Amino acid sequence: MTKIRVIQGNITQLDVDAIVNAANSSLLGGGGVDGAIHRAGGSKILEECIKIGHCPTGEAVVTSGGRLKAKYVIHAVGPVWQGGSNNESELLASAYVNSLKRAVEKNIKTIAFPNISTGIYGFPKDGAAGIAVRTVNDFLKNESSIDEIIFCCFEEDNHRCYTRLFAGSW
Ligand code: AR6
Image 1: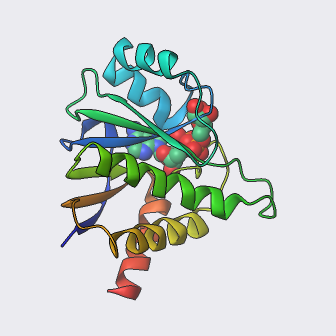
Image 2: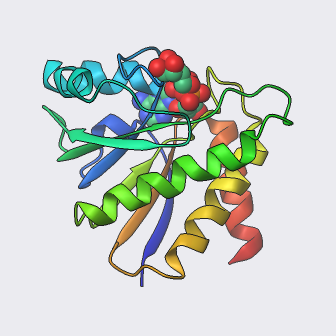
């Protein structure tokens, strides 16, 4: 059975098979967790991203982890929040599902997610946390190859959203 954990911390420091990046479609890096991952992992990650070239919103692609402890980075592109009527929820769920699919394809056993879209992209944190937890749980109903999934929250308010959700459901 897959273990699910919620932590508060810096995802770039985690000793897991893969960390997920909240990337943008250009895959060329940016601010937030994306900037932190590229800084910590070094130029190899960007070189591989440039070769891949593009990732549509809701999709995910894989590179190596460069200098990170994590062997892989899964670059997922979440939606920009535009008020909620532009398919944002479905696209966010899709970013989680496609990240998990990439993980299964690479035989990844331990994976950590940041709170995709809840920073620069402005997705409301409570709603995003609910979608993340629901989507991961639904995916695990038909997939048992992943040992551990970590929701790595950077900020206190996101961490609170997740702990509240887990306290409520389990
Ligand atoms: N570890 C874990 N989480 C982090 C870290 C970290 N080191 N740093 C920030 N976060 P954001 P988005 C959290 O803005 O909203 C970039 O420029 C942060 O507190 O990184 O999906 C990309 O290139 C927030 O909760 O990503 C895109 O252009 C969460 O990570 C755009 O931002 C996501 O915030 C993507 O925006």
